[in-house]
Image (cartoon, rainbow, N blue to C red; front, side, top):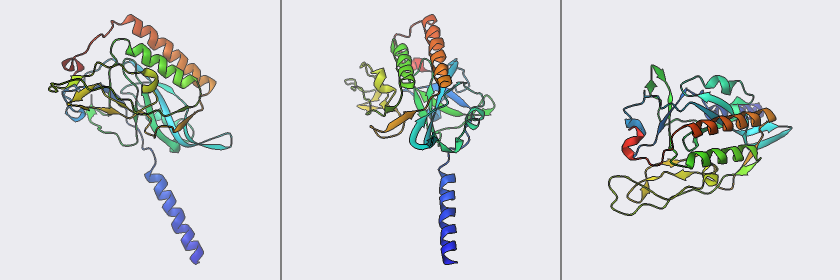
Amino acid sequence: MIFLGSCCGGCGGAVEQSVANAYPPVLPIWIVEDDPNTTIYERKDLERDRKVGKMLVIPLYRSFQHDGATEFLTIVHPFVYEQGEDIEKHLSSFEQRKNLRRLIFWVPGFFPDGLGKTPSWTPIINDKRMIVVELQRCIGSEESEVNAAMKTLLLNGDFTVGKKVSLKPPPPPYAPAKMSKDSYDASEVVRSEYMGRYFNHESPENTHILWAFLPGTQIVNHLSDEDKKTVAVFFEEVTKKAKRLPKNGGIKGSDLGG
């Protein structure tokens, strides 16, 4: 009886811990861009549709079971999504939903970013409660570079999380917020945590945590042939769209929609 009581207590604790660590149901996603003049919680224009169009969502799973093996971290089942729509129906349709750990967003015109299980803000937008995801806008040639880097990352097998990417702070004076003129390496950005381009004194105003694991952590790629086709088609579509749009050669803080 003592043995049984101990076992049940231990098993119950494990179940409770598993439930507590589960990735909760995901609300619809709404995209805004970094603005050095306001915080994400003070946005006054949330209902403005920034016309981001379709995006690719890449689920990251932990303890994913595949061919008799359990992988620590795995990407699989990327899907095309449009902001404001139901996203949970996609996630719930995949096996091992309980092992979902993070969502990675590849949004044309922006740097990629990740979403953990606790969103920063879930306001009501256009009569619907949504998760606000604040992304860094691409400037100049960055969009094509980021798109190419994301395609390479997703189609070239397993990869490791890279070191934090930081830009050199701009020189003084420091107020108002100033933009660094350094360039990003897109192949590093898509594998790493990266610091934003706007600085308050010598500190970046935003930090974007993409994969949320330490540098050197391996991400196993289990994309199926159909998954890879989805990635390739998405890349071709966003590339064509980018070529039709005027180049965004320079952005001022006041242009970012705060």
